[in-house]
Length: 197
Image (cartoon, helix red, strand yellow):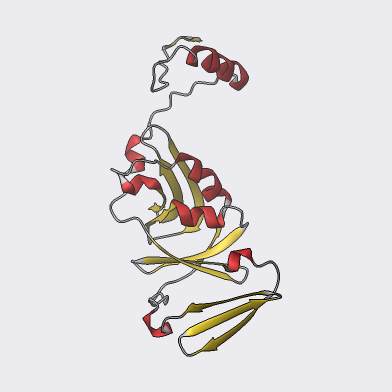
């Protein structure tokens, strides 16, 4: 009912009933004991300030695979003691390395990431079970995705072979060839001296 109220409204509590009134609109709903509400206090958690641009990009690469729930969130991992924000759908890996000291990894659920994707920066803390995110006057307590995130460093090539390609030419070629790819939209590249087929 409250989502249909535009502007201010009055609330009065009478025993186990809450009465809402806005102009001619009025209704009552039963209430519950506030002591039954789950605790939202984090235990011994330190807050760190994080810029949202890394989450905003990472969300685009999370998986929708319910069989691998660990990949359905954005991972905050410690990479050499620094924060790396990571997401993958098993085909594409997004990794953003930062200069923020970080030693308490977790995987944030996509729904929570969507809440903060338009916030310039926010404070985040993790107590081993839940994450707390603070920005402006908002505080969000979120569960995390349980499990071990894949070792992203093991899939990143460690050689010095670099291929410089004109992006517009490459994107145009991929678009044309992609029309004839299989149902998984896979395209094979054959890299030779001075050519890519």
